[in-house]
Amino acid sequence: MSSSENKQLLQEIFSEMSKGNTQPFVESLADDVRWTLTGSTKWSRTYDGLESVRTELLSPLFANFADQYTSVAHRFIAEDGFVVVECKGHVNTKSGMPYNNTYCYIFRVVEGKVKEITEYFDTELVAAVLDDKSADIPSPTNTNVKNQESTTAILKLYELRRDEKMRQARAWFFSEFAPKSAMDIIGLYRGGEQASANFRTVTSYWDMAASFVLNGAIDEKMFLDANSEHIFVYAKVQPFLAEIRGLFNEPEYLINLEQLVLKIPNIETKIENRKRLFAIWTKDNKELSASESS
Image (cartoon, rainbow, N blue to C red; front, top):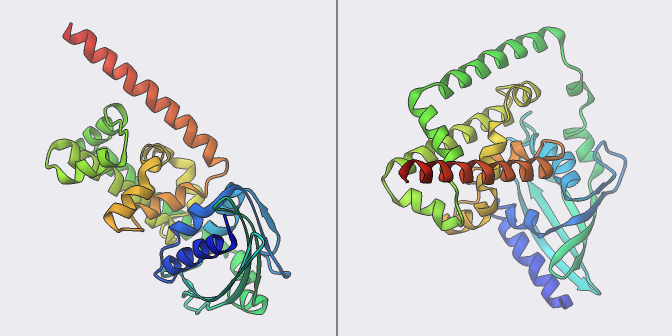
């Protein structure tokens, strides 16, 4: 790609980010991307690979934010495979403080993918807003209360999964639902049959549960230790999410589920394992149905 094409790519990405849509930015990152944050903050280092960027940088960073993050760019300079972008972010943290940092990014773009990022930013603002060390030291009393609340919430979620309609929806989702394209899923929303209700029941349930975790209502480690079904749900819809969001014009569709799942270590391998299991389960189910009808 030429310098002008690289520049246009970043302009389109930041145009979406100014609206709060970070998905095109994430999708532009190469699998072997290297992202270096300068300075001496607790975030400052080089993150090697897309999984590291997602799980060690973006997910924990965005977990601090109370509302939608936006970034408005005001200068783009492109030359020899590099694009320099000056921009300013806007967001409020869960502690109630504004975090409106100013950035200078240096992107290296290869064949339409971002391979390297070097990020310069206001490190004093990061230290003041995001590096509060006292937040890392839990109070024993508060921890006990939080654990009790999380246990109660997790048990309540488990009770909901035992509801008869929910059990039927889950059984359908895991043994019969085998989408081949985004349109297979969109077709469910257009239809009024039982399959549509099953799909919406399962996906909305896990997106809701993930939102509880991401917003601090349930301890994340306790939730992940007690649950893995949400990984299966995400693995089944993940290949089609970007297209569905585009067609629906809903960039945050199932975003809570996605953000929580992508924080799990080695998640790419786990997702592929789930997909292989789905192929086996749906194949076995079809063969059983064929034998019963013969």
